[in-house]
Image (cartoon, rainbow, N blue to C red; front, side, top):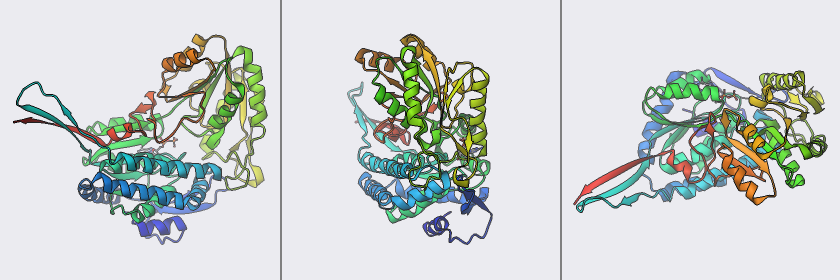
Length: 479
Ligand code: ADP
């Protein structure tokens, strides 16, 4: 098990490993950022054993006690936001301002959960028999685990860890192998906040080895995963073995609809934020811009004006808006989507090239706009995960909705209109779990984040998140 002292050494590069390690590189420079343990299945098992023991005590604490630890944990993240953000930018690549935003967003899940820890209410239900009483209890599900992605190395952990700890569960976190340092940095803060050892553990190593050790252990009662739909489907199969509860936040393919009655300033501003944040590597990023034909030229021109102002560079360089993509595979996929669209008749409005600014690696994509995109192109169906805005024109509201819903995914959808009746009508018809109505940045700790269709199962955030980590038990009491 990685201790808090070891965690401090790992994140500051002073750790002296005595076993196999995994290296973490800066995607912008290929410089070594740090090394983390490459745990064997036996070592993962030891962490699970520690988690089982720790959960037995943690579940006995009061909601108030857990609340205080979570509140302090969140405060410590905020106190150390500069250090945490720099580490995040180094291992993930996003601009420092965005990394700072992520650390604050991550802390907000701990703070929100601190409140929820005190509000795990049961129920009494009127019984059908005169001598019967029915009490509903909510209890922690037990030992839980999380497998998290590299695009939000800090926030995707606290979004799961916060409600798990608030509910009285322990949690074993397997961070993405590309960005484990931000996860390990949290271990130190958890101990400083007063979290007993073993309640939160981090396991690092080869994904299959670590994942299998977790998924096959009967004591792990719940797994919360954020990542690709392909890995999510594989985890569903593995979970069947012990009927493990799953929370899945998988891929997305968000439509971004602009009606001709939209406030265009608002729509263009939101489009830039929604599409180009984290170089387009977020699961709720717009992946299809559907724009009413009468305003499509105007919208495209204005969006291009804003996009041409975005600066590409190292995330730690002053004024950078767009950092590198996470790895070469990501660059290949984005390039493929652009080429496929152009081969099928789309037009390049701006961008389209791979860059290596300031002699950095060749993992930087120029922010790109494509017009004349049609449903037969890959970019219209597959998640791009890059800074590319594909624009498709539509004529009528019904056409926009059917184009928007023509996806296997159902995570986030955005639309812009100043017509109140249309706003409600469209919001109700979109088959997506998160709707940004005149809003390009809907995520917040207070709201239930999650998707429909192949975008996942369950919700994170809001009071809804607590249910994922609680068992419902009823007591039928004869008097
Ligand atoms: P991406 O393709 O965007 O990297 P993944 O779904 O592969 O997304 O990764 C999300 C998380 O799933 C990461 O923590 C990764 O290590 C983990 N993962 C990938 N493959 C497996 C596996 N076979 N078993 C368990 N976890 C896995």
